[in-house]
Amino acid sequence: MKPAAPRSLRRWLSRGLALLTLVGLGLVCAAVYVATHLSLASRQAVSLEQHRQVIEHLVEELTTPGDLAILRHKLDDFFAGRSDLRLRLRSASGQWVYGADDRGLLMLANEKRVVFEIASPTHPFALMQAELTLDVSSDDQLLRGLAWTLAACALTGTIAISLGGAWLVRRALEPVNELAQQAMRLVPERLAERLDGAAQAEEVQPLVQQFNAVLERLQGAYIQLEGFNADVAHELRTPLTTLIGQTELALKGKGDAAELRDIMGSNLEELHRLSSLVHDMLFLSNADRGVKARTRTISSLAALAREVAEYHEAPLLEARLTIGIIGDAVACVDGRLVRQALSNLLSNATRYAQPGTTIEVDIHEAAPGEVALSVTNTGPEIAEEHLSRLFDRFYRVDTARKHGEDNNYGLGLAIVAAIARMHGGRTFARSSQGMTTIGFSVPYSDR
Image 1 (cartoon, helix red, strand yellow):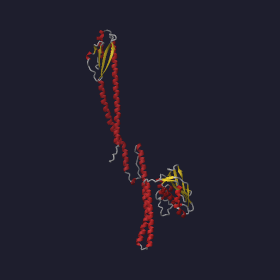
Image 2: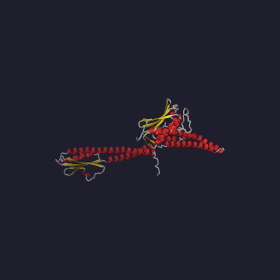
Image 3: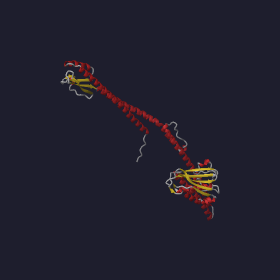
Protein backbone atom coordinates (compact mmCIF):
# COMPACT_ATOMS: atom_id res chain seq x y z
CA MET A 1 0.00 0.00 0.00
CA LYS A 2 1.32 3.41 -0.95
CA PRO A 3 2.02 5.46 2.18
CA ALA A 4 -0.13 8.54 2.67
CA ALA A 5 1.51 11.81 1.73
CA PRO A 6 2.46 13.94 4.74
CA ARG A 7 -0.04 16.63 5.56
CA SER A 8 1.01 20.21 4.93
CA LEU A 9 0.69 22.12 8.17
CA ARG A 10 0.76 25.44 6.29
CA ARG A 11 -2.10 24.47 3.97
CA TRP A 12 -4.07 22.96 6.85
CA LEU A 13 -3.77 26.09 8.98
CA SER A 14 -4.56 28.39 6.04
CA ARG A 15 -7.67 26.42 5.08
CA GLY A 16 -8.81 26.16 8.68
CA LEU A 17 -8.37 29.87 9.23
CA ALA A 18 -10.29 30.67 6.02
CA LEU A 19 -13.15 28.37 7.02
CA LEU A 20 -13.36 29.80 10.53
CA THR A 21 -13.30 33.34 9.14
CA LEU A 22 -16.09 32.57 6.68
CA VAL A 23 -18.22 30.99 9.40
CA GLY A 24 -17.57 33.85 11.83
CA LEU A 25 -18.27 36.63 9.36
CA GLY A 26 -21.30 34.73 8.04
CA LEU A 27 -22.78 34.51 11.53
CA VAL A 28 -22.16 38.22 12.17
CA CYS A 29 -23.72 39.22 8.85
CA ALA A 30 -26.69 36.96 9.44
CA ALA A 31 -27.19 38.51 12.88
CA VAL A 32 -27.08 42.01 11.36
CA TYR A 33 -29.59 41.04 8.67
CA VAL A 34 -32.01 39.41 11.13
CA ALA A 35 -31.79 42.36 13.53
CA THR A 36 -32.49 44.82 10.70
CA HIS A 37 -35.41 42.73 9.44
CA LEU A 38 -36.96 42.54 12.90
CA SER A 39 -36.47 46.28 13.40
CA LEU A 40 -38.23 47.11 10.13
CA ALA A 41 -41.05 44.69 10.88
CA SER A 42 -41.54 46.29 14.30
CA ARG A 43 -41.54 49.75 12.76
CA GLN A 44 -44.15 48.66 10.19
CA ALA A 45 -46.37 47.20 12.89
CA VAL A 46 -46.11 50.37 14.96
CA SER A 47 -46.93 52.52 11.91
CA LEU A 48 -50.05 50.46 11.13
CA GLU A 49 -51.19 50.61 14.74
CA GLN A 50 -50.72 54.38 14.94
CA HIS A 51 -52.67 54.96 11.71
CA ARG A 52 -55.37 52.60 12.91
CA GLN A 53 -55.84 54.65 16.05
CA VAL A 54 -56.08 57.88 14.03
CA ILE A 55 -58.65 56.33 11.69
CA GLU A 56 -60.74 55.11 14.61
CA HIS A 57 -60.62 58.59 16.12
CA LEU A 58 -61.74 60.23 12.86
CA VAL A 59 -64.61 57.78 12.48
CA GLU A 60 -65.74 58.39 16.06
CA GLU A 61 -66.11 62.08 15.22
CA LEU A 62 -69.05 61.26 12.91
CA THR A 63 -72.37 62.35 14.34
CA THR A 64 -74.77 62.09 11.36
CA PRO A 65 -74.68 60.17 8.09
CA GLY A 66 -74.20 63.51 6.37
CA ASP A 67 -70.78 63.83 7.97
CA LEU A 68 -69.37 61.08 5.69
CA ALA A 69 -68.21 63.70 3.21
CA ILE A 70 -66.35 65.46 6.00
CA LEU A 71 -64.80 62.12 7.02
CA ARG A 72 -63.62 61.47 3.47
CA HIS A 73 -62.11 64.92 3.35
CA LYS A 74 -60.28 64.39 6.64
CA LEU A 75 -59.03 61.01 5.48
CA ASP A 76 -57.77 62.52 2.23
CA ASP A 77 -55.89 65.12 4.22
CA PHE A 78 -54.54 62.45 6.55
CA PHE A 79 -53.24 60.22 3.77
CA ALA A 80 -51.92 63.08 1.68
CA GLY A 81 -48.22 62.45 0.98
CA ARG A 82 -48.44 58.84 2.24
CA SER A 83 -48.47 56.90 -0.97
CA ASP A 84 -47.40 53.78 0.91
CA LEU A 85 -50.68 53.69 2.87
CA ARG A 86 -54.12 52.78 1.58
CA LEU A 87 -57.44 52.59 3.39
CA ARG A 88 -60.69 51.01 2.47
CA LEU A 89 -63.65 51.74 4.71
CA ARG A 90 -67.06 50.17 4.40
CA SER A 91 -70.22 51.14 6.31
CA ALA A 92 -72.36 48.78 8.30
CA SER A 93 -74.78 48.57 5.35
CA GLY A 94 -71.98 47.34 3.07
CA GLN A 95 -71.46 50.57 1.16
CA TRP A 96 -67.92 51.75 0.52
CA VAL A 97 -67.29 54.92 2.46
CA TYR A 98 -63.67 55.41 1.51
CA GLY A 99 -61.15 53.78 -0.84
CA ALA A 100 -63.73 52.32 -3.16
CA ASP A 101 -61.26 52.65 -6.03
CA ASP A 102 -59.05 50.00 -4.39
CA ARG A 103 -61.79 47.36 -4.40
CA GLY A 104 -60.70 44.12 -5.96
CA LEU A 105 -56.99 44.74 -5.51
CA LEU A 106 -55.09 41.71 -4.36
CA MET A 107 -52.62 41.91 -1.53
CA LEU A 108 -49.07 41.96 -2.90
CA ALA A 109 -46.13 40.17 -1.37
CA ASN A 110 -44.49 43.44 -0.35
CA GLU A 111 -47.56 44.74 1.50
CA LYS A 112 -48.78 44.40 5.05
CA ARG A 113 -52.46 44.67 5.76
CA VAL A 114 -54.50 45.02 8.93
CA VAL A 115 -58.29 44.55 9.00
CA PHE A 116 -60.29 45.88 11.87
CA GLU A 117 -63.83 46.91 12.86
CA ILE A 118 -64.98 50.28 14.11
CA ALA A 119 -68.24 50.94 15.96
CA SER A 120 -70.51 53.09 13.73
CA PRO A 121 -71.35 56.37 15.49
CA THR A 122 -74.50 56.84 13.39
CA HIS A 123 -75.91 53.31 13.78
CA PRO A 124 -75.68 51.86 17.28
CA PHE A 125 -74.65 48.22 17.46
CA ALA A 126 -73.40 48.38 13.84
CA LEU A 127 -69.75 47.91 12.86
CA MET A 128 -67.81 49.54 10.04
CA GLN A 129 -65.19 47.40 8.26
CA ALA A 130 -61.75 48.97 7.75
CA GLU A 131 -58.81 47.65 5.80
CA LEU A 132 -55.44 49.44 6.13
CA THR A 133 -52.59 48.44 3.81
CA LEU A 134 -48.93 49.47 4.14
CA ASP A 135 -46.58 49.17 1.17
CA VAL A 136 -43.25 47.77 2.48
CA SER A 137 -41.50 47.45 -0.88
CA SER A 138 -38.96 50.10 0.13
CA ASP A 139 -38.07 48.13 3.24
CA ASP A 140 -37.81 44.93 1.22
CA GLN A 141 -35.51 46.64 -1.23
CA LEU A 142 -33.43 47.89 1.68
CA LEU A 143 -33.17 44.36 3.06
CA ARG A 144 -32.14 42.95 -0.31
CA GLY A 145 -29.45 45.58 -0.66
CA LEU A 146 -28.29 44.92 2.88
CA ALA A 147 -28.12 41.15 2.21
CA TRP A 148 -25.96 41.58 -0.87
CA THR A 149 -23.74 44.08 0.91
CA LEU A 150 -23.24 41.77 3.90
CA ALA A 151 -22.51 38.78 1.66
CA ALA A 152 -19.94 40.78 -0.28
CA CYS A 153 -18.36 41.99 2.96
CA ALA A 154 -18.21 38.41 4.32
CA LEU A 155 -16.53 37.04 1.20
CA THR A 156 -14.16 39.99 0.87
CA GLY A 157 -13.27 39.78 4.56
CA THR A 158 -12.74 36.04 4.31
CA ILE A 159 -10.38 36.41 1.34
CA ALA A 160 -8.46 39.24 2.99
CA ILE A 161 -8.11 37.45 6.34
CA SER A 162 -7.21 34.17 4.62
CA LEU A 163 -4.42 35.81 2.65
CA GLY A 164 -3.17 37.53 5.78
CA GLY A 165 -3.42 34.28 7.74
CA ALA A 166 -1.48 32.35 5.09
CA TRP A 167 1.26 34.96 5.24
CA LEU A 168 1.37 34.76 9.03
CA VAL A 169 1.50 30.96 8.96
CA ARG A 170 4.36 31.06 6.47
CA ARG A 171 6.23 33.55 8.64
CA ALA A 172 5.51 31.47 11.77
CA LEU A 173 6.92 28.32 10.14
CA GLU A 174 10.11 29.94 8.94
CA PRO A 175 11.91 29.19 12.26
CA VAL A 176 10.90 25.55 11.89
CA ASN A 177 12.44 25.50 8.42
CA GLU A 178 15.57 27.03 9.90
CA LEU A 179 15.66 24.21 12.46
CA ALA A 180 15.35 21.69 9.65
CA GLN A 181 18.32 23.31 7.90
CA GLN A 182 20.34 23.14 11.13
CA ALA A 183 19.43 19.47 11.57
CA MET A 184 20.48 18.70 7.98
CA ARG A 185 23.94 20.10 8.68
CA LEU A 186 24.46 17.65 11.56
CA VAL A 187 26.77 14.80 10.56
CA PRO A 188 28.72 12.29 12.66
CA GLU A 189 31.78 14.58 12.47
CA ARG A 190 29.73 17.44 13.97
CA LEU A 191 27.75 15.60 16.66
CA ALA A 192 29.04 18.04 19.28
CA GLU A 193 26.94 20.79 17.72
CA ARG A 194 23.43 21.50 18.97
CA LEU A 195 20.36 23.17 17.53
CA ASP A 196 20.24 26.89 18.21
CA GLY A 197 16.79 27.66 19.59
CA ALA A 198 17.49 31.25 20.63
CA ALA A 199 15.36 32.67 17.79
CA GLN A 200 12.60 30.10 18.14
CA ALA A 201 9.17 30.69 19.56
CA GLU A 202 8.33 29.65 23.10
CA GLU A 203 6.21 26.75 21.84
CA VAL A 204 9.15 25.34 19.85
CA GLN A 205 11.62 25.51 22.74
CA PRO A 206 10.62 22.12 24.26
CA LEU A 207 11.14 20.46 20.86
CA VAL A 208 14.59 22.04 20.54
CA GLN A 209 15.53 20.97 24.07
CA GLN A 210 14.35 17.41 23.53
CA PHE A 211 16.14 17.19 20.18
CA ASN A 212 19.36 18.47 21.75
CA ALA A 213 18.94 15.93 24.55
CA VAL A 214 18.64 13.18 21.93
CA LEU A 215 21.79 14.51 20.26
CA GLU A 216 23.55 14.45 23.64
CA ARG A 217 22.63 10.79 24.14
CA LEU A 218 23.49 9.98 20.54
CA GLN A 219 26.88 11.61 20.90
CA GLY A 220 27.54 9.63 24.08
CA ALA A 221 26.53 6.40 22.37
CA TYR A 222 28.68 7.23 19.35
CA ILE A 223 31.70 7.97 21.53
CA GLN A 224 31.07 4.78 23.47
CA LEU A 225 30.83 2.83 20.22
CA GLU A 226 34.10 4.30 18.97
CA GLY A 227 35.75 3.47 22.27
CA PHE A 228 34.29 -0.02 22.15
CA ASN A 229 35.68 -0.57 18.66
CA ALA A 230 39.10 0.69 19.76
CA ASP A 231 39.03 -1.55 22.85
CA VAL A 232 38.01 -4.58 20.81
CA ALA A 233 40.77 -3.93 18.30
CA HIS A 234 43.25 -3.53 21.15
CA GLU A 235 42.12 -6.74 22.88
CA LEU A 236 42.19 -8.77 19.69
CA ARG A 237 45.50 -7.46 18.42
CA THR A 238 47.70 -9.02 21.14
CA PRO A 239 46.40 -12.62 20.95
CA LEU A 240 46.25 -12.46 17.15
CA THR A 241 49.85 -11.24 17.02
CA THR A 242 50.82 -14.07 19.34
CA LEU A 243 49.02 -16.63 17.22
CA ILE A 244 50.58 -15.34 14.00
CA GLY A 245 54.08 -15.23 15.50
CA GLN A 246 53.91 -18.72 16.98
CA THR A 247 52.47 -20.15 13.77
CA GLU A 248 55.17 -18.54 11.63
CA LEU A 249 57.84 -19.79 14.04
CA ALA A 250 56.44 -23.30 13.87
CA LEU A 251 56.38 -23.23 10.06
CA LYS A 252 59.99 -21.99 9.84
CA GLY A 253 61.37 -24.28 12.54
CA LYS A 254 62.29 -27.89 12.34
CA GLY A 255 60.96 -28.92 15.73
CA ASP A 256 59.74 -32.36 16.60
CA ALA A 257 56.14 -33.41 17.10
CA ALA A 258 56.18 -32.62 20.84
CA GLU A 259 57.29 -29.03 20.20
CA LEU A 260 54.57 -28.61 17.56
CA ARG A 261 51.97 -29.96 20.00
CA ASP A 262 53.08 -27.38 22.58
CA ILE A 263 52.71 -24.62 20.01
CA MET A 264 49.30 -25.92 18.90
CA GLY A 265 48.21 -26.18 22.52
CA SER A 266 49.26 -22.59 23.20
CA ASN A 267 47.45 -21.43 20.09
CA LEU A 268 44.32 -23.34 21.12
CA GLU A 269 44.39 -21.59 24.48
CA GLU A 270 44.57 -18.21 22.78
CA LEU A 271 41.72 -19.20 20.48
CA HIS A 272 39.57 -20.16 23.49
CA ARG A 273 40.24 -16.74 24.98
CA LEU A 274 39.24 -15.08 21.72
CA SER A 275 36.12 -17.22 21.57
CA SER A 276 35.25 -16.20 25.13
CA LEU A 277 35.77 -12.54 24.25
CA VAL A 278 33.55 -12.80 21.16
CA HIS A 279 30.89 -14.62 23.20
CA ASP A 280 30.88 -11.85 25.82
CA MET A 281 30.67 -9.17 23.14
CA LEU A 282 27.72 -10.90 21.48
CA PHE A 283 25.97 -11.19 24.84
CA LEU A 284 26.43 -7.46 25.49
CA SER A 285 25.22 -6.67 21.98
CA ASN A 286 22.01 -8.66 22.55
CA ALA A 287 21.47 -6.93 25.89
CA ASP A 288 21.90 -3.54 24.21
CA ARG A 289 19.24 -4.49 21.67
CA GLY A 290 16.75 -4.87 24.51
CA VAL A 291 16.65 -8.63 24.92
CA LYS A 292 14.80 -9.47 28.14
CA ALA A 293 15.60 -12.20 30.62
CA ARG A 294 13.46 -15.37 30.55
CA THR A 295 12.41 -15.37 34.16
CA ARG A 296 10.96 -18.01 36.39
CA THR A 297 10.49 -18.20 40.13
CA ILE A 298 13.64 -19.06 42.06
CA SER A 299 12.64 -20.20 45.54
CA SER A 300 16.05 -19.55 47.11
CA LEU A 301 18.66 -17.17 45.80
CA ALA A 302 20.94 -18.34 48.62
CA ALA A 303 20.90 -21.89 47.21
CA LEU A 304 21.75 -20.46 43.80
CA ALA A 305 24.64 -18.49 45.36
CA ARG A 306 25.96 -21.67 47.03
CA GLU A 307 26.05 -23.39 43.64
CA VAL A 308 28.17 -20.55 42.28
CA ALA A 309 30.42 -20.65 45.36
CA GLU A 310 31.03 -24.37 44.87
CA TYR A 311 32.05 -23.67 41.28
CA HIS A 312 34.62 -21.14 42.57
CA GLU A 313 35.87 -23.37 45.37
CA ALA A 314 39.24 -24.07 43.75
CA PRO A 315 40.16 -20.41 43.01
CA LEU A 316 39.02 -19.45 46.52
CA LEU A 317 41.23 -22.11 48.10
CA GLU A 318 44.13 -21.06 45.91
CA ALA A 319 43.69 -17.45 47.03
CA ARG A 320 43.25 -18.57 50.69
CA LEU A 321 39.78 -17.05 50.87
CA THR A 322 36.54 -18.18 52.43
CA ILE A 323 33.01 -17.29 51.45
CA GLY A 324 29.90 -16.50 53.45
CA ILE A 325 26.35 -16.20 52.21
CA ILE A 326 24.02 -13.92 54.13
CA GLY A 327 20.26 -13.68 53.67
CA ASP A 328 17.90 -15.26 51.20
CA ALA A 329 15.01 -14.26 49.00
CA VAL A 330 12.53 -15.57 46.48
CA ALA A 331 12.67 -13.89 43.08
CA CYS A 332 11.45 -14.35 39.54
CA VAL A 333 14.70 -14.24 37.55
CA ASP A 334 16.65 -16.07 34.90
CA GLY A 335 18.69 -18.44 37.05
CA ARG A 336 21.37 -18.98 34.41
CA LEU A 337 21.99 -15.26 34.02
CA VAL A 338 22.00 -14.59 37.77
CA ARG A 339 24.54 -17.40 38.21
CA GLN A 340 26.73 -15.78 35.57
CA ALA A 341 26.43 -12.36 37.24
CA LEU A 342 27.30 -13.78 40.68
CA SER A 343 30.17 -15.75 39.15
CA ASN A 344 31.60 -12.59 37.59
CA LEU A 345 31.30 -10.74 40.91
CA LEU A 346 32.99 -13.61 42.79
CA SER A 347 35.79 -13.77 40.20
CA ASN A 348 36.30 -10.04 40.55
CA ALA A 349 36.33 -10.21 44.37
CA THR A 350 38.65 -13.24 44.40
CA ARG A 351 41.10 -11.40 42.16
CA TYR A 352 41.42 -8.38 44.48
CA ALA A 353 40.62 -9.70 47.98
CA GLN A 354 43.34 -9.91 50.61
CA PRO A 355 44.37 -13.51 51.37
CA GLY A 356 42.93 -14.93 54.54
CA THR A 357 39.75 -12.84 54.44
CA THR A 358 36.14 -13.75 53.81
CA ILE A 359 34.09 -12.78 50.78
CA GLU A 360 30.48 -12.13 51.69
CA VAL A 361 27.55 -12.68 49.37
CA ASP A 362 24.65 -10.65 50.72
CA ILE A 363 21.05 -11.18 49.59
CA HIS A 364 18.57 -8.71 51.01
CA GLU A 365 15.66 -6.45 50.20
CA ALA A 366 17.22 -3.20 49.01
CA ALA A 367 13.93 -1.34 48.56
CA PRO A 368 10.24 -2.21 48.43
CA GLY A 369 9.83 -4.64 45.56
CA GLU A 370 13.57 -4.95 44.94
CA VAL A 371 16.08 -7.60 46.03
CA ALA A 372 19.81 -6.91 45.95
CA LEU A 373 22.65 -9.39 45.49
CA SER A 374 26.07 -8.02 46.41
CA VAL A 375 29.58 -9.37 46.89
CA THR A 376 31.89 -7.72 49.43
CA ASN A 377 35.62 -8.29 49.70
CA THR A 378 38.40 -6.88 51.86
CA GLY A 379 41.16 -5.24 49.90
CA PRO A 380 42.40 -2.06 48.31
CA GLU A 381 39.78 0.62 48.03
CA ILE A 382 38.56 1.91 44.70
CA ALA A 383 38.77 5.66 44.19
CA GLU A 384 35.45 7.49 43.97
CA GLU A 385 36.07 8.62 40.40
CA HIS A 386 36.35 4.99 39.25
CA LEU A 387 33.23 3.63 40.98
CA SER A 388 30.78 5.12 38.48
CA ARG A 389 32.73 3.61 35.57
CA LEU A 390 33.33 0.13 36.91
CA PHE A 391 30.50 -1.26 34.79
CA ASP A 392 31.79 0.28 31.53
CA ARG A 393 33.12 -2.12 28.94
CA PHE A 394 36.89 -2.67 28.98
CA TYR A 395 37.23 -0.18 31.82
CA ARG A 396 40.16 -0.96 34.09
CA VAL A 397 41.36 0.67 37.27
CA ASP A 398 45.09 1.05 36.75
CA THR A 399 46.07 1.67 40.35
CA ALA A 400 45.45 -1.06 42.88
CA ARG A 401 43.26 -3.15 40.58
CA LYS A 402 45.53 -4.27 37.78
CA HIS A 403 44.59 -7.22 35.72
CA GLY A 404 46.85 -10.10 36.35
CA GLU A 405 44.96 -12.78 34.51
CA ASP A 406 44.84 -13.34 30.84
CA ASN A 407 41.10 -14.01 30.76
CA ASN A 408 40.22 -10.65 32.23
CA TYR A 409 39.23 -8.35 29.38
CA GLY A 410 37.32 -5.84 31.49
CA LEU A 411 33.90 -7.16 30.45
CA GLY A 412 32.88 -9.03 33.62
CA LEU A 413 31.16 -6.14 35.40
CA ALA A 414 29.73 -4.86 32.10
CA ILE A 415 28.02 -8.24 31.77
CA VAL A 416 26.70 -7.90 35.34
CA ALA A 417 25.19 -4.53 34.42
CA ALA A 418 23.68 -6.02 31.25
CA ILE A 419 22.08 -8.86 33.23
CA ALA A 420 20.64 -6.35 35.70
CA ARG A 421 19.13 -4.33 32.81
CA MET A 422 17.66 -7.48 31.28
CA HIS A 423 15.79 -8.01 34.58
CA GLY A 424 14.77 -4.35 34.87
CA GLY A 425 17.23 -3.86 37.75
CA ARG A 426 20.28 -1.72 38.44
CA THR A 427 23.87 -1.99 39.63
CA PHE A 428 25.69 -0.36 42.51
CA ALA A 429 29.25 -0.17 43.84
CA ARG A 430 30.81 1.34 46.94
CA SER A 431 34.24 1.17 48.49
CA SER A 432 35.39 2.52 51.83
CA GLN A 433 37.41 1.50 54.90
CA GLY A 434 39.07 -1.33 53.04
CA MET A 435 35.78 -2.93 52.03
CA THR A 436 34.47 -3.00 48.48
CA THR A 437 30.90 -3.98 47.67
CA ILE A 438 29.70 -4.49 44.12
CA GLY A 439 26.30 -5.87 43.25
CA PHE A 440 23.05 -5.56 41.41
CA SER A 441 19.36 -5.60 42.16
CA VAL A 442 16.37 -7.17 40.46
CA PRO A 443 12.71 -6.50 41.12
CA TYR A 444 10.54 -8.91 43.04
CA SER A 445 7.75 -10.49 41.07
CA ASP A 446 5.33 -13.42 41.22
CA ARG A 447 6.40 -14.58 44.57
